[in-house]
Image (spheres, rainbow, N blue to C red):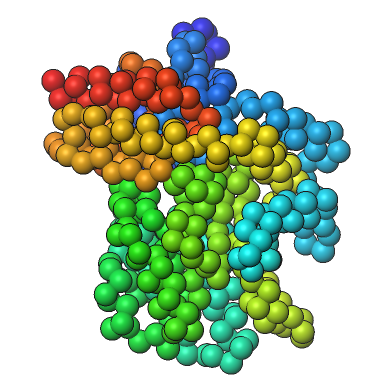
Length: 416
């Protein structure tokens, strides 16, 4: 390792606290962290010049690959004008242009209003707070509860974490946050007191942090029908599933469902910069008009960051220029075929270009496989003993085969 990288590693071990990481083994003198220094397309390069397929799209964010010239051009062009300006009491062209494009991705949906924030958690927080305030300002004061699903995950801020059904991600604050009732299947909906529920929240088609667990076909549509009949607002958390991951632009489209709130982040900018949106209807928006006390008093310093909006505009331009969705079907088909060929696994769950490869073995086997995969040119991260594969949508058929071959070798190595 060059001397400068050695010093950087010592510095980072001395000062940095990593998320979701036991820090004792990380800071051990014998541990050499993988330092990623550059990327191109589906590939990342480390401090030693070794190349790896980005097997989980840099934590589910990257859509069109790293260093894409179109997205970089949009960012550079904006950077030459201004990087960030306040969105509280001001506005700017990239935000207006992006809102227009997002609304017209689903022109018949009625999701005509776009609220900007920073990340998936804040997009969820905005939707939930809007739902509660909407009911209060339309005269329904009894709705003080959120309906969520067992094993769901909606982010790590206190409110978003309180919605989730995975204790591991709640920290020590399990008794705080929103009032929540949870179900695990559609049949339980009819037993609920719907008059107390303000909104229902779901990860459409597939639960991510739960280990890529697939919903039964039709559940999303059943939930939409129940919400409509019960006066409950529907929040679709498409932070992970949005922008082509499931084979359609948005997961809700698989069952022709239109939510009352659509939360997007991660792939919104192609994975280049933090940005999120909460999309909703004119009907909900109108309930916040009139007296100033009815306004939505929530926001962040970097709301509608100009560079982030520019990156998102570049992301959507690539979808058009490269006809990403048109070319996706053949990749989705091959992705599913390759996942089915893996041996030594307990289950291979696939939804579009998302796979959860479940291993049968002792705790820590998933991490062991991911470490072995590095030796074969593949980077990804497990959820327990579930290996996540979610490459950028620009991945070629040959790169898919390379990725699955590397994973199979890693599984064989770990099991041996």
